Structures are given as structure tokens and as C-alpha cells.
Image: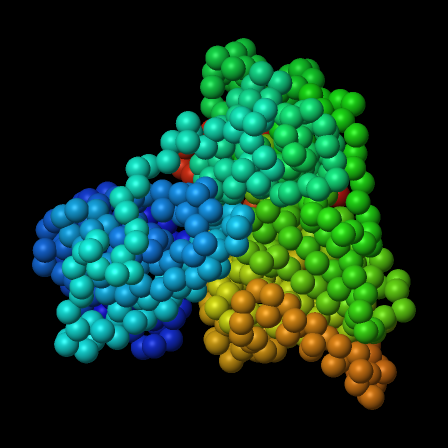
Length: 598
């Protein structure tokens, strides 16, 4: 069946649905609904049997929904309507929520219902973005597959929305505004603060003030031990700040300075004059419009704020914020890491490398790498790079830092390394997993093992070594050139991953742990290590790892420092979502000793 996607963005949900429908033999075309004209043109050109809108912020044109069945994927229970569905569900502490697949009609979200699936929510739900990428996506897949089957049957008639029917408990809700999200630090409890921030994460964030300046807040985590005057900043850790509430404290990992010329008037006069940041000697420059680690945004304003160090091996019995932790059980050293949106800055790469080196020093047999629930990794941190005084040079530092991490994993001869991909993975983050000896993926995660869509970026992380050794040279070229999302079924078939484990994130983690412990218990474990060592030596004699890295980085050097600005333009477009950045780009010279590819 010919299916057309009309979507505002080709995001994790639309990619997952594309994979699932394609696996079932359907022909799917994806069109970005940038305008009414774009939607009309796509429908006229493709003449689809069915139209699906996985994530659509604009109304479907009447000329489309009156002539074609158009299914809207709405992240709400039956009867729920409005653009802030998940926001209100998290904010009001709903005990369960769902996804409804309904038919486009004259009134938004009020068309006939084709399918509806619900899921439970905890008292304080995960962040909106996390909920969307996990529970919402899984429910949407079930709902869309059900609706497609019903459509193909030609016998099903969707049910009109009827609020008098049992089970229709949703209602029309208004768009959530910043006044609805506002935090009162003198009155709100930690649960209320966390709920408000998570209901706005990953967009638009909660607008608040610190040091008299406006910021959007993201990445909220409970803190049970630290206390202080409500609203006070108590500590900092790994880029996050801890802020007191009336009954405890919360960690806030990321901030975005509001685009407000009056709030920091004159701060960017050099940029306005064309001189750029290189001429500036100001101690503090408020970077607007980029979501960044909180300590990076506040900079010297945090002087005197204590560093609440939490070693990766620390055993804790309370809620707090930590990006990396290490646990040993039954011969396995487990490294758990979860970076916001899967992006790994230079510092984060080195912190993870240090944790890995520590794990490698321990008398265990297996090291298990457990990536985050939302993302295993997405590679280098484009936002931090964009905010740097010299983005090209920071790109270079970041790619070398992640290369250093991969190098240590590849050269680990004392342990078997297992990677558990329980969240989506992209670019260098997808390649990072392949450095391990065994790779397990959670059923339904989306993999994007390519770089070129970011302005023709060549990529590194030793991909020219680890990808062909798993899938072969021809398939490696196809994956990196086609720039398409890949599902776990295909990934297992071609050897990108060793196995796919079902269940939710917690069940998957248990499954990976069981596999790792099974390897550690094997009677022939030392033979496994010997074989691993011999394979690495054979590969090194054929072509040294240093040669792969040198070739990749010479190509990346062209992307970063060469005359073509495509990577820098694509990065800025990604970071600013197409808006014009306030900061002038800096073009740097290549580091001394770097030979660029020609």
C-alpha cells in the first residue's frame, strides 16, 4: 500500500513508524509539512492510498482530508484535544495516558477514532521528550499498525468522538503558556518543580530568572540530601546546578538564555560590528538561543558555588543527579551513562573514558556499557560546539575525545566488552556501540549510523574499521551514504547488532545483564579472550588502528577547517532550528600538524 507521511519533522516517532510500515511491505514516502502548498503538492504527486501524520503542528488542508483518509497520531487519550497534551498530562500528574489515532476533520483532534492505546504514568513522570520517545512511540506504533490493518480491511468504520461514551475521559485543553509553567520557589515543592520542568522538556522549557537574567530550564532531577534557602543555588556537578526548594532541592542540567536584547544589552556589540568574539575580552558573555549545560551558561556567575563531587563508584541510597555510575556484580563491571539528548561533549567523552579505564582496571571479566533510556549516544555535542569561541576547533577536540574513548574500548584485551543499546543511537553514537565485542539492542530502537546529513560530515570513531568488520564493506558504504534510519530487525539481519531483546528499558537492562553474566561464567572464557586478542593482532598487522584514525581525521579536518562551510551551516541550522544565530561564526585554521585530505 502507498502511504504518505505528512510530518512537521522526521523525528524519532516518524522514523520508527517508517521502519515498522516498510518492514510490513508498505511503500512509505515522507514529506515535511513546511507549508500548505508543500502538503498539497506531496498528495498530488504521490497519490497515496493512505495519509498518516505522525507529528503535525499545522492543520491538514481541507482539500486533502475531504478526498483522502488522513490519520492523525495524537499523543493523548480518547477525547483529549489540543497541542499541549503531554504537557498537561505530566503537569497534572495523570496516572495513565495514551495515544489516539484519529481521522483528520474540520475540527482539530475531533475526528473519528481508529485506535487508542494507553500506558501507566508514575506520580512524577519522565520528561516530556523521554515520554514521547518511549511510551508514546510504543503506543503510537501499536495504534498505527492497528489502524492500517483496519483501513486495509475496508470493513471498519471509525467511531465518532462522543464524550458521553464510557472510556472517553479526555477533554479540550488550552495551549500551555509560560504563566501555567511558572515556578514559585518560595512555595513549590520539589515534586512540583520537577513536574513543571519535565512537562516543558525538551521544549519550550520553563522560563525563570537567575541573577536577574531570564533563562529557560531543562533537565530536572530530584535531590534528597542538599537543602537551603528556597531558590538558592546550592551546588554544581558535571554541568548541572542544584537549586533549593521549600522541601529539598532539584538538579537542573541545562539552561537556555532567552533571546532578550534588553536583558543583556551591548553584550554582543562586537558581533554586531562584524569584529566577532575573538576581539572580545569580556569575562562573561550570555549566549542566547542555545540549550547548554547550566554551568556553561552561567559561567563566572557561579563563583563560590561548591562542587558536589560524586564518584562513579559511589553507592547512594537517595535521589540525586549523576551522568555516569559504575557497579560490579557477578564478574561484570557495569557502566551506566545517560547524557542529555545523547550528545557527548569533549568533557563528557573523557569522563566516560576515565570510567571505562577504571572498569578495565578491576578484577572482573566483562564490562557492560549501558546507554541511556532515551539515547545510547548521538556522538559529538553540536550545541556545545556551536557555543564555543571557535566551533571548528571545539569540533576537533570533541571528535578526538570520542575517538580516544573508542580506542580504549577496541584495545581492551583484559575483558569482554558488551554494549546495551536501550535507546536510539545516531552518528558517532551508533558507531561507538560497535567498538564492543557484543552489541545488544532493545527492540524498537532507531539507529542512524551515518554522518553525511550533517553538511557532508565524513565521520570518525574508527567507523571505517568497526562498521565493515560487522556488516561488510558494501553494506557499510550503503549505510553511510543512504542516510536512512535502520530498525533493529534489519540491524540483526546484517550483523550490525548481535541480538535484539524485547521489553521496556528496565527489562532490556536486565536482559543485557543476564547476557553479560552468562559470558563471564563461560568455562571457555579465557579462550574467548585469547581469540579476541589474536583477532585484534591480525587486524593490526593488516592495517593499524592509527591508520584508520589518521584517514578519518584528515577528512574531518576538511569538514571543520576547509573552505566548504557546509558542516558549519548544517550545525547552526540544527542548533537554532533554522533561526538566524546571533553569534557570528568563527573560521579557524587547522591545528598545527594536521594534514587535510585532498
